[in-house]
Structures are given as structure tokens and as C-alpha cells.
Length: 176
Image (tube, rainbow, N blue to C red; front, side, top):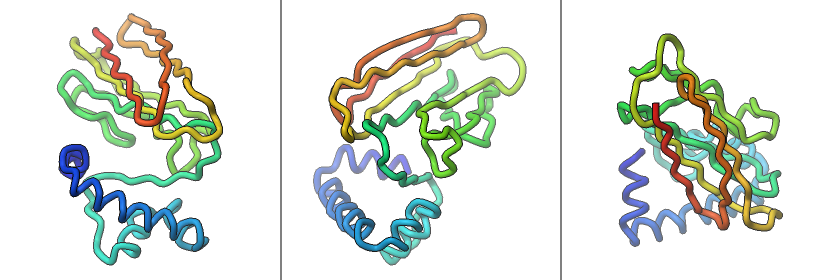
């Protein structure tokens, strides 16, 4: 999946083709209720169906209803080994993500809140990286205030920052 992200960021021709393909998909989602429901419940099948080819298993693609005033994509947490922390998988350093919000299952009841925790033992010393990105603004006027709380070992962090426009991203490094 990372290769597609890199190609999108670095290759203008690939970005244009991808944007055009996604515009077609989004247009279909506004007129085809069954397809829209399939995007929400089983995105990989919906994408395969729409584009006529299998979608690689390498990454996870989630579609959500836009019911919020602003949509903030919450942190990808990277541990000191450079490993991405994901739901249902414990990293080599012992971290796991409890839930993925907003996500398909609505586990957070509309809240943008996630919990990454150490499965067992003491956290590795080093830098923990968190990135928070504003995906889109709905009816909300910028800026969007983000409040981020974290505890690494015995140290507690409480941060506030504004995201002023879609695609704004704030990178935070937490030391332990």
C-alpha cells in the first residue's frame, strides 16, 4: 500500500488518474445505494467490483459516512522501532491499538478517539511518533482544535493544536 501512497504523492500523472478514478467512484456512491452500502461494509469487494480487478490485501481502505462538521484522521502511531501500530496486532515492542476510529464498526460512537497501549512490560526507550491529519471540513469552519493526550511510561503529554485546512497534518514526537 505504501508504494501507492508514495506514487500518489510523487507522481502527478498517477495522482491525476487516481483522482479521476475516485471521482467516478464517488459519483456512483451518490446514485447507487447498494454500492454505497457495500463501500461502507466491505470496501475491498466494492472497489474490486467497481474497478473490475482485485484490490491488493496490502492495506486497509475504509469509507465512512460524512456526518461530522469536520473529519480528522487520527494518529498513525509509530513505535521506536519504526513499526506501525495497528488494531489486532501486537508490535515487536509490545504496542497494540484497541480500536480504529471512526472506522466501520462505529466502535467510538462518532468520536474521533483511539487508544494505543502497551500489551505487557515496560515501553521501549526512544521516540514515539504520532501524526494527526485533517481529512476534510464538512460544515465546520476552520481552524479545528485537536486535543491529544498521551502517556508514555510515567510521562503524560497533553497537547492542543489547530488544523487550518484539509490535508493539514501535525507530527508529534513523544520521548520516553
